[in-house]
Image (cartoon, rainbow, N blue to C red; front, side):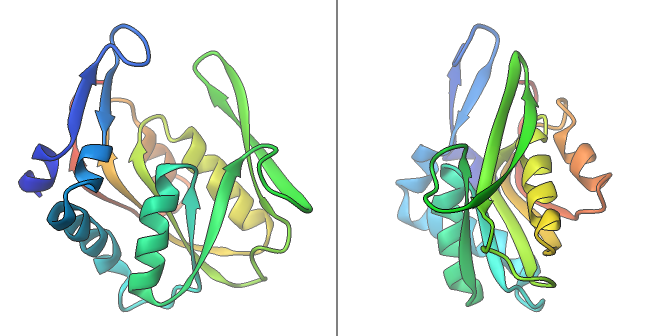
Length: 176
């Protein structure tokens, strides 16, 4: 996974001073690195029944669609509030300076469907926690959550694992 880590660009002081932004778009543009990331994210779930991958906007769409294809299952977009047509259900989560919300269609998941949640990075775990709550609210069963990057000092992975969700991450970066 060291090769994957080397393909992820770090942008200092974005979106604000003191933040080291981990940019996966440089990984996405590398065909071999992108394929390796998709294979590695899907690998632990190959032998499990997965009915759908739920990808969190926006980079989770890119990863989730490819992982769903690899696992031979459907894809469910989890979007920012107000972006989906039709009837939705939402879940708020806390940001550093306020509150935001994500939504899915109210008919996106059937009772008992087994769902894998996917995003590019887990930091505070707020968005992933909101996604887990949405899936569970619809009657879906969380099989796991997969991320390219974990920022362990921030503690999001621990928060998700405390919800009894297995987290699979490919690389870790120190700091924020």
